[in-house]
Image (cartoon, rainbow, N blue to C red; front, side, top):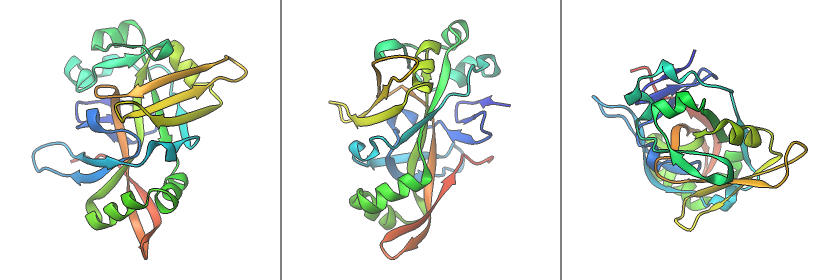
Length: 221
């Protein structure tokens, strides 16, 4: 059963994703995981991997329709300001709109093995910064994005996702059509577009390289 709170999102996969500071987080964002005593945990973003390193490595998953009534207006809206429609158009997101238009959530992520390879083979500076940060270092490996049903269908049936940087140095994701539709659909992850996010941490180092990564979910505390 899903749960929608202003500080976490318990998704259909059973995992609890972070929501605090989501306007500043994208796949590939890294920094220190902050754990304030009286507030929700979050990623304090220091930077991000070069988005071209994520090209053709991103995956997607659409769990289908979300029962938005499970969350209150304040919890659902939180820091989310917009949702995506066909053509990458951004429209105003509200709790009422989510229910009326039956908006959907799309999970965009990079597999653990692919992320480790990016950090070891390409993003050397990011890897070094994470090692310097120590046990609190985290990197965003997944984001939930709100879409109209028709755009979600196109993304879920796309054959590939490409990644590049926007002019504002954000993450641009392009879905390539296949047998079910032709052309491309592009979204740009800017402030207010990420609903929730997932993190990974380094479980084991081997010299200056990462030997093992491990997912890190929002705690129950």
